[in-house]
Image (cartoon, rainbow, N blue to C red; front, side, top):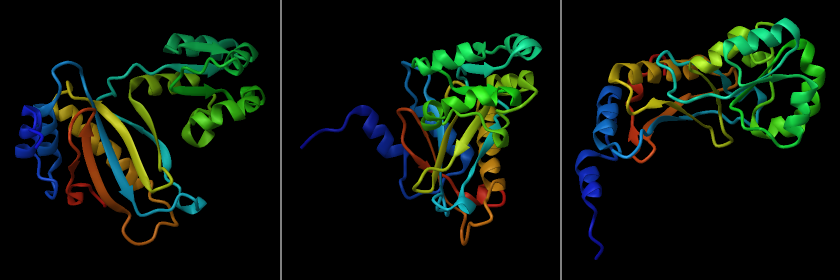
Length: 232
């Protein structure tokens, strides 16, 4: 019979797979069990009562996490002239037009967010097959096609994350690092879950938020009491 490791024994004592935890308690447990070797990412997963194969049940949008993400977000911007200068000043990692398009066509796609001014969409449109599968195609509904590229870059760098429900009705995102203080992590959790609740699509029927789990890169998954999520 295989013996459990010390950490597995700790997990068995600390975690009740059937219990619905409060957010504060769950985050405290994850911190206590966190790795000492690297700074783990804290993630939230939400099971929703939607079928994203139907357009009126798609859940997608942006939310700004007040405590930031703890991640260095790489941003590319399609812009010219003054807008290009503003994007660079705001911290964009790469700014260009046709040259940036050719660079991406060559396979250089190491970006977390792609932003474009409206006048550049003729160029960006030619990258549909390249950016689309990676979820990087600029979209006016998400604020990534905008004349105010300066603000869009600042938002992306400052803790704004995109969310999109997957085909099984699950939506998930990182909300920070275990090294964040408790209040910052809890604030980010509330901002993320509130945004999902507010994004409830018109076609959603019955119970919308079915299950919420919080975990860390190496940690256990802890079920959260849905009653703590306002409007759920």
